[in-house]
Length: 84
Length: 93
Image 1 (cartoon, each protein chain N blue to C red):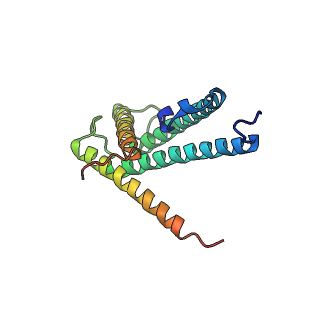
Image 2 (tube, rainbow over the protein chains, first blue to last red):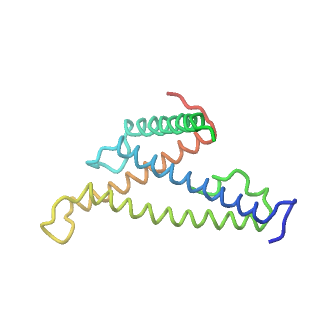
Image 3 (cartoon, rainbow over the protein chains, first blue to last red):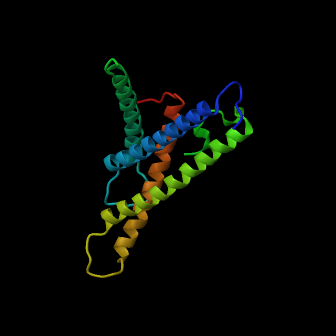
């Protein structure tokens, strides 16, 4: 694999690897979020196919809060890392 | 999940762009299959309780339909909100 802009092929592989991990992380995040908010917001008796207004609001708020918890947790993990 | 998840694929050289594109396609296929299985599991466990017969009765079938529809609609809404948050769009409480 030819080097471009002084980048070695090893570095390039690393970048692709990181990009792939980042994408997989986002997909996993989305899937967990979807599952959790469904469990918390949707009535399991499935009385109808449409989402009612209450469910819609709940979903919006659940997603928002989940996002905040994600950011908060990320900050805490970054700051509490033990010194190497 | 779609290609808009990545900021700017266009700025990459052609072969890198194709590689990223192939990576995304693969993730998408894997995710679709995973979603299929988990939806079946969910609707089965929420809708099927008895085993007097081999076939689903009318109620069970209707329940499964509503379950699947509802989950898909829910998933779309979550996707919209998630995309908004990713872009840093502020929404009201």
